[in-house]
Figure 1: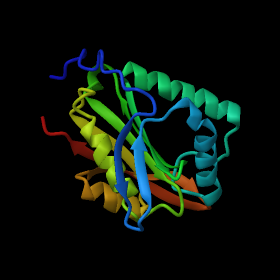
Figure 2 (figure 1 turned 135 degrees about the horizontal axis):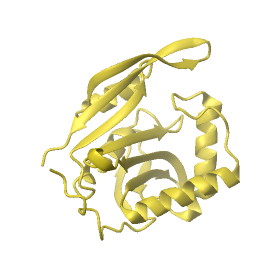
Figure 3 (figure 1 turned 120 degrees about the horizontal axis):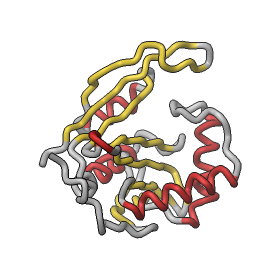
Length: 194
């Protein structure tokens, strides 16, 4: 049974670099926790995903005030240990964002995972390295399972999730209505070895 007190005292600093690597295209990538100074970069990041029609739940651009509220909550949750957030940076620019959010109550051993990579930075290994880095944080958070949801049409993401050990466990038919099309949502799970 998971220990409810496992994450006490596991403060993670904002802006902490967890990994640096060279992507398949030769660009240098830094994976780190977010920091307040990322506000404008994160706003530009999410708004670029909305413009591109990316396979994410957000479908409207955000204002700086909305992004500031969101980032403030993320940084507070990072400090409390209820969430672990990670950004990918290239040449000082945020090109990827991801997180694990710890659930509560009887599901406190489960984390919900989310990840998005900016257009122009996909298929070069950033998503895979972000996922591996997130997964490495699960024990610190007291997690035994990760759950994510993905559009059934997002074959690229599904392939990456499977590569790091996620398996499809369910499907919600017609959960998404995008660009005049009905799309299934796939639920994927990865059990974490103790």
